Image (cartoon, rainbow, N blue to C red):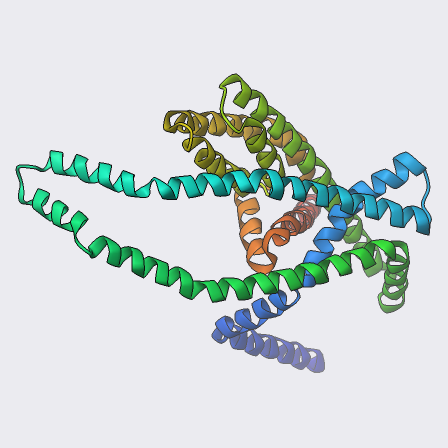
Length: 366
């Protein structure tokens, strides 16, 4: 009895000391863990790509061939990659040049906009000392100085941007290689993993782990499938509305919305900002109407369609979704945003399953 008591006391003291050590060094531990997660960015990108490509690849294998072997797997994977590349090419060749032209046009209008604003301010304050300051400010070297400082800052940050871009390219290439390997050897890897788990753990734990893996596969598959369906619905709704209101760049902005909406909440917001800039180069009034129309459609889609198409399959509250996107984006960028939502959905489902089981157990005891 005393031996058990001493053992429990020792475990409790050890646990308390470890917890205290963690709490007093939480910042350093968090930095180390965060750095380790970022170091594995290519792996997270590879996993995200593998799950993403697995959906069209499985559909091609199942619906077109009705079976799978090495040659069919290679063809299905190649076709899936080709579809993704085609969408990206359309985005870069069609949408981005329009956006760059619009931004260049807006930058070219800045001098005349400053002159116009200067005239408005001079007329508004012509009977005060402020008008003299505005006149001197607009004609002095202060504007040039501010612009020079801004451009110097941009040039200084360019090296950092270039370094981040090179890192991104390396991570992407490595992630693509990892994803291709995972998909080509999918069955073999799963079988090896099952065999290792069976040998390392007891049956009860293996059963729980299989449950988690099944839930993970379902969550990722459902998220990608239904999120893509939801993106398509949103893009069609936007295109119809843009045609009705006769907005310029209707098809371009609708396509951009369809592609970017794969990232919930933030994706459509990016499309909205780019769309407003594109339309703003043609008409400011139309750009304002566009912002209103876009927000109305987004609210209808978010509150009516999204819960029915994606919500019931992923089942995450909006606040949890936002947190998942922030964390995933910080760790592994765009692909981190995608992978973190179904991953959070798994943890969320497991938590509530455990909570409900305990609740039922408490009721039975009562």
